[in-house]
Length: 454
Ligand SMILES: [Zn+2]
Image (cartoon, rainbow, N blue to C red; front, side, top):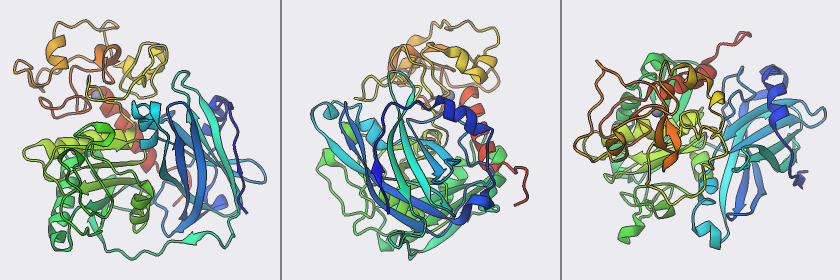
């Protein structure tokens, strides 16, 4: 029924070029529900494997029917759904995973591990071949690493049965033409349901208070799924604190105290399937600063951090999750070698100058700023706690430039603005112009009315 084959060293670039012009009609190939392919992503710093797990049918499909083929060259992975008989490309998406990040840690040099993952796409009418390609860090090119055929009528396709309570937090319109966010509860006990609902409303007003999301407020749907946990709060291994929670979130991921993440992505997919969704964000019942966001995968952060940090963390992690924006700050991670100097990063808000001409939108915003853009303020840009660092002044905005320091590195990686929500955001509360532009372009893909009537 399902076969598993592994092919290496196939370049993706030609496929991307042809696919963009060939968006197919949704009704011809898909039904209005979701097919989910679960697999295990395994290996170490040098090797990478994908192992088939199972295929699941889920009840809703929230994606835009005119945005089937990926139009952004974003993400460390890309999956393709093709008609099995004709080979026609039907659907594709870029994404990133926690496993890929783990491969850049010192631990991956000395051990191998596996993480459960999954991909979702509209349920095909006819048998399909699904391929997963990964991007080579050194060359920036994609290689096919996994392929499997799916018999859409197989009785081994498990049907997911929704059973958890759901809530509409900010419902604006048909899912096909909105950005559909699902919020999941983590670390809230049965008695803390009201606290979670309150956190969901706060998330909605917080995230939609940032430009350019504010501009598109009417095109965001936000729903929530209620999963109570046995114990209140989340695990903090560095404090020997382990909690029994619904999704297993914990701080100290990759030994970084503030990196609160969840390793079992399939648990998140199980919960998210209770509503039509495109973007998964987990609200964790914690006051401890921390969270993470991975492009087209999931985001999570603490819902009760004192002061403005909860709101700012939402917008920072959402930038990673929704658009694939890079961190513009320096330091703060054990990950190594993720931005080689001779390779242009795919993220739209950093450059190594290996191929800055590919950052067309950013380049257009430069004005007369030289590349790289000199600055005497290196110290405060790299040290957010420096009391001399100025607050952003909307009356006197900074100039878009190419400022050295970003992508965790003080040298060799450049960012577009002195400070940004994607940087250490203590003295600023906006996305920089380059990030705002990338967000806007992404929203437009999700809400495109297309040529066919819905
Ligand atoms: Zn930015």
